[in-house]
Length: 271
View 1 (cartoon, helix red, strand yellow):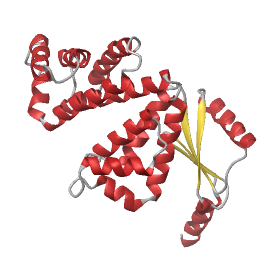
View 2 (view 1 turned 30 degrees about the vertical axis):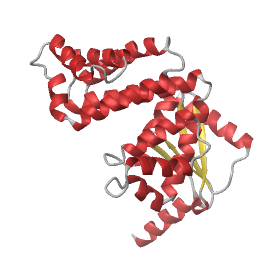
View 3 (view 1 turned 90 degrees about the vertical axis):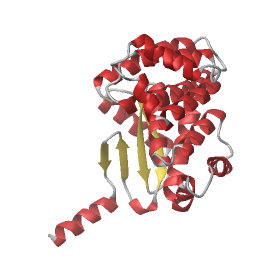
View 4 (view 1 turned 60 degrees about the horizontal axis):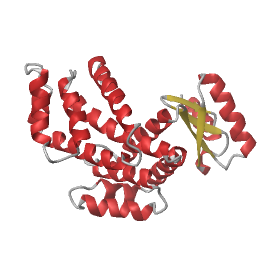
């Protein structure tokens, strides 16, 4: 998003967070309805164009949203969307992206209030790692031409039966968005959002074998000192790395694996 849309989103987040603080237990319902509104605008680009048209007055844009959403969603969700329509957006797709953001934010707020935020983050990460390995399952989950969304959601539920309600809501949303972007890419965004909600950053660590507790604690402490912010580890096992660790933090990659050194040596030999 460009700066104008980021500012509009920040204002919407501030308003919505204040409402969520007084709406305990309603977060999942709000998220479901905001997702539905996002789908409505995504499916009707002309409508999105109208509610983000700077040529219309803010009041007219807000009223258009009120008319469109009348009796479709709860008043709180309608008022949220009206407020967003009265604001200024740099690009048309940013409006829908902002709605997605607010729906995910609602789910994570519910997880936090239920003391399940860390569990939700971990379950999302485990699901993402599993799906990266299971190509056949990824292809089915992304095939919106051959399989109805409900069937793909059911398949995902059966693959991760122990997910809590908040994780399940996010997994299901990732599947229904698979015709626009890959499920794993969406899950990475959700994991990042969960980390931000928990006021830390995530280090995805790949090792040839499980790390001991003291090794994890020492690595987390070193990374926290390096980045100046709490770092939590998600450790995945991959024998192909042979030895050492591969660490992903945002766009940073720290690769100290033997496999990478062997590859580098082979490349040097070829050259």
